[in-house]
Length: 318
Image (tube, rainbow, N blue to C red; front, top):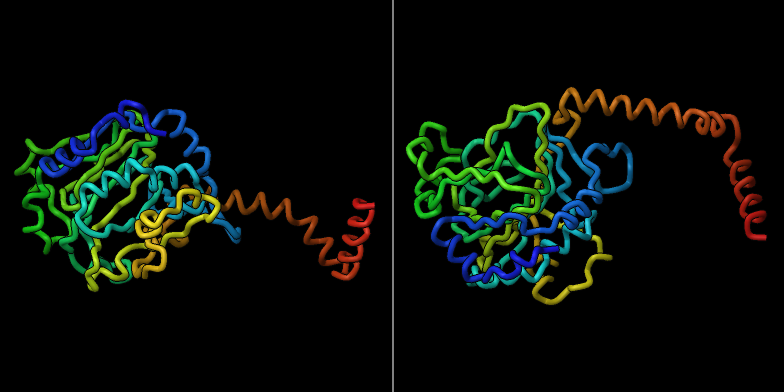
């Protein structure tokens, strides 16, 4: 999973960098083979229509697999790895919780304004900024030469002065131009940042470019009643729960209320025109394949169909 070089980095060094600069980066923290195995578990092009499964949703130029703990054992292993938990244990003073996670793909065109991730929500709407310590873990699942993660270095020391702002303007951030760090790195690279640091993804306008990312956020909720319900739902495949220690149970939030809806909001209206056309083609192909079966069902009673199934069963097992 992790490269030997990354595992050799002392957690104290990682935490020192986050506390001082607001972030820590490491190129190729995950092995190439492990990243490819994650991507094999995610089909970004498949849209589930009346399919009883967990899958990808579309939101503009991005596609999200938010419930990846239900779909990918490889992702589960990363999010619950001892390396991640050790970093969190050393960074946080009180109880911490996985509050959101997702694999997503960005392509063609995308703009994200400068912001911080210390958010409280009511429904899909941001209600206020909170003061809980938090860490954002972000793994590049593809080589990133465009649309890279950008950070305003050391901004976590003063960003809370602007908690009344949902986003920060380009003209304001330009004052800190010398502190902007653009993190173009190869597949498997890791960024860990303080959730109070100002950041964004570099604007993208290239129809041939795709960036794939695994992101998850951990907040120090403690025992404060005000923090009950903080976080999005976790859907977890119980097959993955091989390392279910009490610490992992608490970290994943078993039995804890989750009041935020799953990000992003998605419906037919959030699918781009290009993807809608592709979806129509998929539906038409499925419809043509289903026509013979539908005709048989329409012409033959269900009793005849069931009797035929019983006969086939007896032939197969006798």
